[in-house]
Length: 86
Figure 1 (cartoon, rainbow, N blue to C red):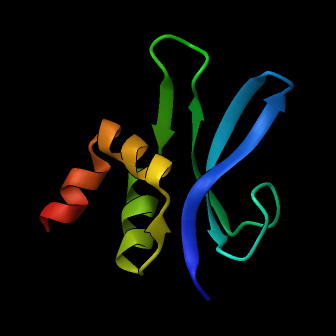
Figure 2: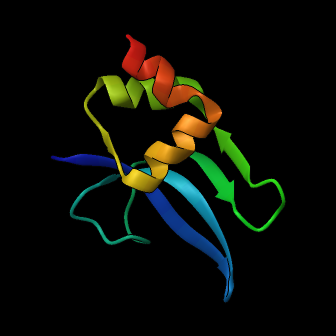
């Protein structure tokens, strides 16, 4: 089973808020997921990013692949650099 760390859209029309979730790569964007590990609100200034760092690191060690957007969000909070550094 290929596992991805990706965004799941919630919120109202034209007011998106995203949850950062662990999901099977074959599942739809807003469909079935395994675990919620954070959320992202792009509407506030500066954008609000909350991540459960321990769980994200654990999933990355287990081989979960982040999408491009999630990778950039993880880099903004410093998780991606610590993971790639070793």
